[in-house]
Amino acid sequence: MAKITILGGGSWGIAIAALLHKNGHEITVWSALEAEVEMLREKHEHKMLPGVKLPEDMFFTADDKEAVEGRDLLVMAVASAYTRTTAHRLSSLVVQDQKILNVAKGIEEHTLMTLSEIIEQEIPQADVAVMSGPSHAEEVGRGIPTTIVVGARSKATAEYIQNLFMNEVFRVYISPDVLGMELGGSLKNVVALAAGIADGLGYGDNTKAALITRGIAEIARLGIAMGGKFETFCGLTGIGDLIVTCASMHSRNRRAGILIGQGKSYEEAMAEVQMVVEGVYSAKAAMELAEKYQIQMPIIEQVNKVLFEGTSAAQAVKELMLRDKKVEVLDIPWEN
Ligand SMILES: NC(=O)c1ccc[n+]([C@@H]2O[C@H](COP(=O)([O-])OP(=O)(O)OC[C@H]3O[C@@H](n4cnc5c(N)ncnc54)[C@H](O)[C@@H]3O)[C@@H](O)[C@H]2O)c1
Image 1 (spheres, rainbow, N blue to C red):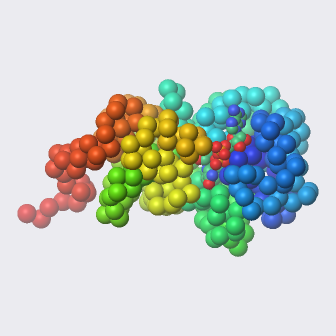
Image 2 (cartoon, rainbow, N blue to C red):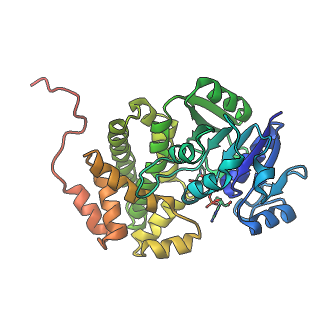
């Protein structure tokens, strides 16, 4: 049995808390939001994850020291906009080589850093790992079979975390390609916005399949230029997560995209979804990365134009369809 604290008590943090408790571990959930801690203490349930009842022996706290001291693993599940402030706040309490598993997805605007890079910068003494893959909290909370990947710099850390999480409904693979995993996990949110926009315009399955396939092509192009591995983008944290995010109504990015496709601004869409839509922030960061690494990312470029430059969704689709004529796969030679 390990002593584990989940930092951030949102839907993903709570689904993970329930899963790890079922695996026999001692679980504390910490949140910076006092109201969230109160709700969890009183109801043993999160309003964003109805139906997932939390056991009586799960502990909820807003106290930093209680959350961090003596814990074998800290699972960082705060929304990505708060990864840096949370890491900074808790840094002095983390001991040398204490393990931190980041399960959030995003790229920081302006610094263009991944979340594990942010945590390593704020808490250099920590042993940081990441977890990503097609895994909606609503389904993990209901015990629906799910597969996921844990990435870490050392195989021993990855295997340690794999053993904590793995059970008959939660299969965990491991990978050394932390960067590729994180890029796939955050950039797919931008393509999910595009998929939602296409749905909002009333387009069909052909358009969705096109966005998923060409979307992973551009994510992989950028990811490989930055040092990620091609195979990772073909795996659970790449195409796997992209498929689930573009197809599922559990995806807040897709739901926000649908509203934008129907003519709402991204601010109106976020207000209606009632959640932070991380793809909106990652869209800007992705565009900056595309420029920095000189990579063509036409879908992500059009999403940025719709979000921030007033281009209509229909016009953006037309621009994508009428781009320069291309060969699908560049590396296959012609015989004639
Ligand atoms: N929900 C899912 O199904 C799912 C699945 C896989 C990965 N993720 C990723 O996990 C992360 C968390 O997802 P979520 O759905 O639980 O998000 P969420 O929007 O519900 O927020 C998670 C938590 O962040 C914390 N938080 C919010 N505002 C804060 C603040 N001002 N200061 C400090 N902490 C604050 C709160 O504890 C909140 O519950 C995201 O990056 C998401 O992409 C989510």
